[in-house]
Image 1 (cartoon, rainbow, N blue to C red):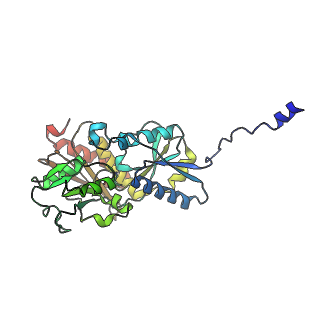
Image 2: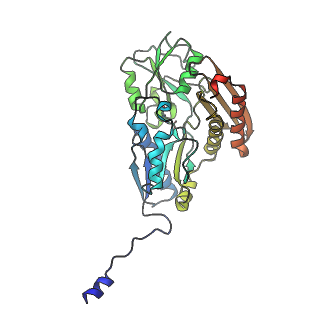
Image 3: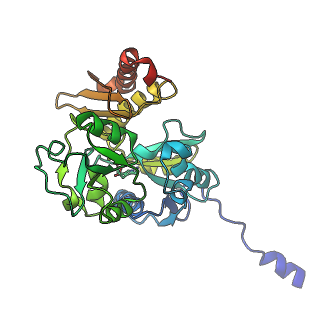
Length: 330
Ligand SMILES: NCc1[nH]cc(CCC(=O)O)c1CC(=O)O
C-alpha cells in the first residue's frame, strides 16, 4: 500500500519547456546604464509579448572589477562581456543586454546578436568641469582653454581631440558614467567626453556642454545601439527578440562592425566608424584611423547599398588600410 502510494505520488519530472521557459532571464552588467538598458529591452519584450514572464539578473564582469586601467591594456572589449556570454551558455540567462560598442566583433561560438534596438543619438558629448569656462555649442574644441587637461580612456576620443587641439593634454579617466562625472568635480580635468546616448538614457543629457559633430569626432562602431545576445540554438527566444530588431540600426551595426573586423588584427590604431541610412535607402558610411597622439588622422567616406552592408564596411576598412602609414598597421 505504502509502496503503491509512493509510486503514485512520485513528483512529476521537471517540466522541460517545449517552447519558452517559465520566465525569460534577462542579464546585464550592474552599472546604472546597463540596468536602464536592460529595462528598455524588458519593456520592448513586454510590449511585443504581453504576459511573457521576465526576470532580470545582474552579472559582474572582469571589466567592472578593474576600473582604473585602459581597456586595451587589460584585454580589450571582451572583458565586459565574457562572464555574460558564459552565463548564457550555462543557461543561467536566456538573453543578455549590451552596449553594442562594448561587444567584441567575434562572439563566442553559440552566441548571436538576436536583435538591436533603434539607435539613440550616436554622437559624443563634451562635458565640462565646474571650473571650466563655457564653450560655444557650435565651436566646442576651439574654446577649450589652452593646454587644458581632458579626461578620457578612449583612444579614439583622445586621437581625434589631439588632432584638433594638439596643445591639450589627456589623462586617463575610466569607470561608469557616474564615476566619470564625479571625477570632473575633483578639479583634475577641465572636461571629459562621453557618449550622448549614455547621458540621455541616464537622464543626464543636460550635462552635455556641446554635442560633437561626427565630422569632428567620429563615433565608435555601434555607439548608441543596444544589442541583445542569446544562444544560437534557442529558437523560441530568438523568435521573441526578432520582433524587436530595428532595421536601420542593424544596417549601421553591420557596416560599422565590418569596418572594425576588417581593420583589427592588422591595425592597432584608434578606429572610428559611423554609418547611416539615407532617405533614398542607400547607406553613407565614414571611418577613420589615427595615431593616438593625433599627429596623423585618416578618414574615408563611402556610399553603398543597404543590402550589401557588410561589403561596404569591408571596403571602407580596406580603403583605410591601403592608405595608412606603416606605424598604424601592426
Ligand atoms: N564604454 C562605455 C560605454 N559603453 C556604451 C556607452 C554609452 C552608450 C552607448 O554608446 O550606447 C558607454 C559610455 C560612454 O562611452 O560614454
